[in-house]
Image (tube, rainbow, N blue to C red; front, side, top):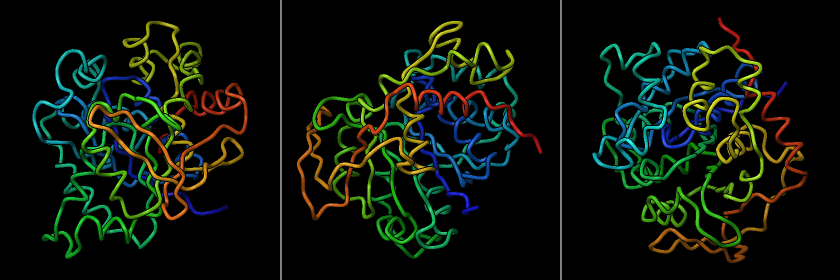
Length: 305
């Protein structure tokens, strides 16, 4: 069996329940020996994101995963963006409800990258991109003599971004922080695969959570609070995680290399550019087939050590 893919997940856990499902899928892939979760960063200012992430990690038997958060105030914080993360952070066991303070996201990214072998990490970003932009802006420090750009170039095999719409359009993650999206798309030093809005929008998952997992499952609870009992949701973030671990795997094709331009309002457009190492996913099978794959992973019981 091939070695597990080392994943750093960057997530905006809270505004949409598909982040919780994406983390569940990642844990299921780790239970299968396909992935290793090197760390998780949270990319909004919500004080409940880290606790929600840790609660899900604990449910899946991995309470020791390090978590960093964006520590700038005011970004996607407040009631409209706390559809479930506050409830889970307040009611499920987690380190942050017990008084632990989350690490700063960019510092954690630098430390995680510096500690890993060259070319060994896949970063999967399933929210706006202030953390990754912050990494690119970071300079040498006590963690590493390398700049953030140099660390990414040396340590990251591929960046997977759930963002944008292809070949052109508007998507929420880019719209929430167009400056960071433009910066990362233009300056990230390794290949980027974009999983656009259109890839996950028709793949509806989550319904089986209510039929096949226990009521105390925090991911099921996230779906209950966001879409209602028995509901399902588009699978934008889940597809990005699945690609990050398994690659194309017959589920998708890759576009030719190209260039993405992000406007001030977050809208994007794509042009073919053979000299650029950016691509986006194209479907290679119908959405029902990928839905079945994701649902099987989503409802897989945790393997507790």
